[in-house]
Image (tube, rainbow, N blue to C red; front, side):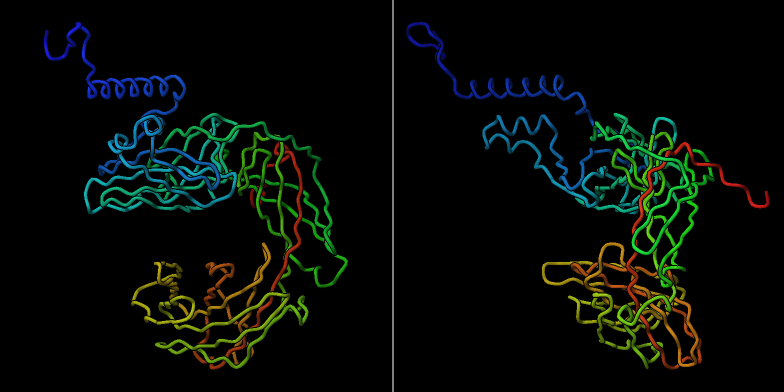
Length: 454
């Protein structure tokens, strides 16, 4: 008999062979379970663009859940194999995005064909589409990025609105002309049942405090696949300070959890969310205003530190500085530096970067701008600012200026346009706290807007 047998003819046990047999059995079981129980765990879809860039659909998560790069069979094998053998598998990565608790995050990997196009996002916007060809508004081009490996970078994009009643939907990655760069079929990770909302015909009137707001109609314009819906309002008030207030459409919502500026007309009900703001300075009381007088107009090359604070409507405002055209850097909320505007630069921007030791905020504009911080704002509160010069002129301010979060506070940048002969400025701040209104309507009651001149 050979060395693999006992003297009585029984075959000797081989430990290495036993490990290999167990490993093959585990892999076979894992593959079988993957095919039987997890048929959706296919190889991710991928699209290669004309320049060789490859976009790969990795998967989805709901809300704040983390996305893990482990495939289902890899997770199963990690649980079954001894720890020293599971190191043969590639290490998993875990990523997460922001958004709302019921939004869906879609994760993509972009691999460039050459270093020249590495880390360049090949789309400008994105939108989901349902089976009827309707495109939901995406709410912008917000994204997170992860896993930079040189030629490869992963992105997470958030969909606050998409066809939640369908088992799958189309995701379009769009260029600057809103034409598809790439289109993927995404499996919907959210299922019903969804509640039923009862609607009533328009006009509808709701009252909040001193204001009564009537939604008289909804008017539709634009293409059927991406219409523009415009509400028509009538407002009345029992207090003079609210007579000239203005309603603004906040969003549309549906019973599936979508909230956006454009929702499917096939839904049985929409919730129309509106806010009513006061905008005229004369409609605010002294306790709702904070004024700083005799502020110098910034020259071309230096910051003007203001560092003055006050309270209005329970909100603490701290005016930080005035900056000429250029770029301001604020480190850990205190130290600042300034770089004059680069010739030919236009527009305004803001951003931040962080390490374990410091956070650097950057603010830039092609016009003089003001920075201030607000603490204690509630929800949709709006900080309005009026700038007057020493001749009593009401200066134009840029309504497109925005804010950036610093912990729980908002830091605002306000770009303004000062005449060359202006020497001193007065800054008047006011906190406009809106009134909220909700209406439940049937999308079928939306009417086509009349064309101009008809």
